[in-house]
Image (tube, rainbow over all chains, first blue to last red; front, side, top):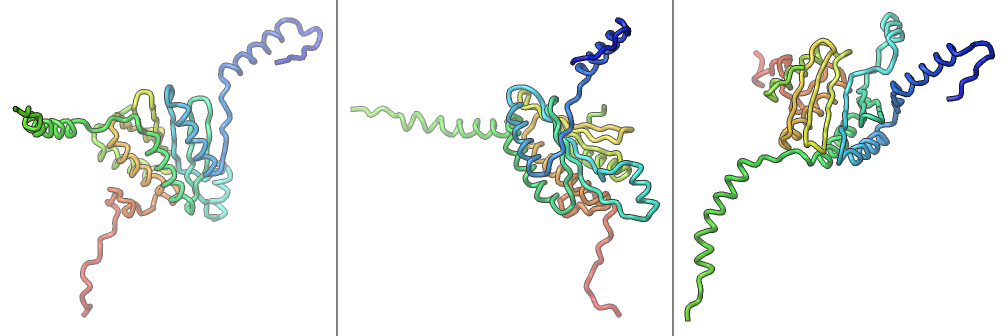
Length: 155
Length: 103
């Protein structure tokens, strides 16, 4: 970061600027990128792909009107109806994306979102107990059969 | 952070939380593929409830949960979620019984 210094300010100003520059780089949050629902879903898929080996994906849902509190109060006093949508945010810790889903597209978004999750969340454990019992039973059934099927033909 | 063991409890409390303060309540999900873990969090910045799991069957339950919350958040806290298969029926109006003739 280039810092223009006026002559005569001395070291204190430089120090201050450097400190704030350091702070900015450490506490720099990536911008929240607001997308339309469909690009959002594409980006979300990419996020899941990127975090397969390492990292997490956070998805947050919130009821929101996308307007500031001041405006909401004004609208309330004016008797206007405030349109609410569902705010969906997703992040992988570094990049953040968001979108607003209205009433009309919420069911379509919901099913696409569910499909993405189903496809991506494959690392969760599947219920093994019942399967083990089943395979154990089937093994027991197969064992007596095996020696009979493998009976040596005697000449 | 309160981790709730029972899925049904978690679901009920989440819907309650949302309905009591729709402005502030948010639902967060964290998925870690490398660890195979899923954590759900619902909070209104006063109370917080969480549910964690590593079971694939819970992913299906979470899907229904997502449907419920999408409906609630997109349409409003008064939205009817019984059609989504939700379990919140405390406010459901009593079904009118009988189609008999009124005399």
